[in-house]
Length: 287
Image 1 (cartoon, rainbow, N blue to C red):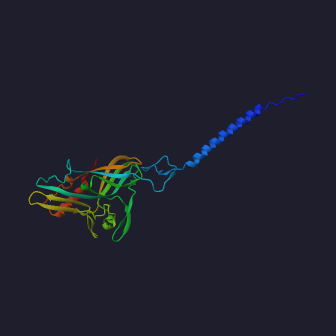
Image 2: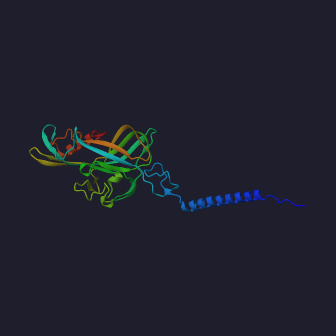
Image 3: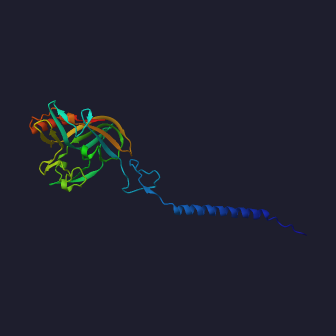
């Protein structure tokens, strides 16, 4: 009896398909393994409040985030015109004078949210004084047209909707007892590079507001008015939004005609200074 040979072609074909499939799987695994060895998780800023927030990062960095800056843009004016140190102005319609210099310390910047939350800049600095060293919010600005129109107050993290914005003209008692030579050279409280000094002595501290006038009409004279009174609060009702991750810009107009309203060169220096102190709350406005 002749036996028929079994047909093995089907089995061979199946084995070939399995072999081909194994090759494909092996190839894919090699590619995936290669990618996994080449890929390194990216470390960067993952704080959405930061200006350098990186949505493509995998791991948060340590101390690499940069936060928005509260910027102050100053518009110096004398009445309806830009302030000019070369312009001759009339004082009370009698005397003609020029403003030779004008400097003012601003500090303690705050903005209040619709939920009545007070926010400030996050920067701090150690104020090295004669009797005490304390850490304080580093939001000191010395506005002066000769130094420019743009000033950085400090960095902040939280955005939101705000209903009040405030600051003080002058320095608080702790800052006023700072030893200026102990501060960084570029800091507003260091007066070593200042030809028009804003510092009196270790007992009196700083001059908060200073203006130098030159009387042009006869008899000519220069008058230096310097105020070291307690800080004067300036408060504005506002309605503005600061987006998270974006700088906040405050446009502030300072009117020196209002500052000198009621001042007379025939007055004593002390009387003139008291008048300027009384005028100070009225010279600022938001644009």
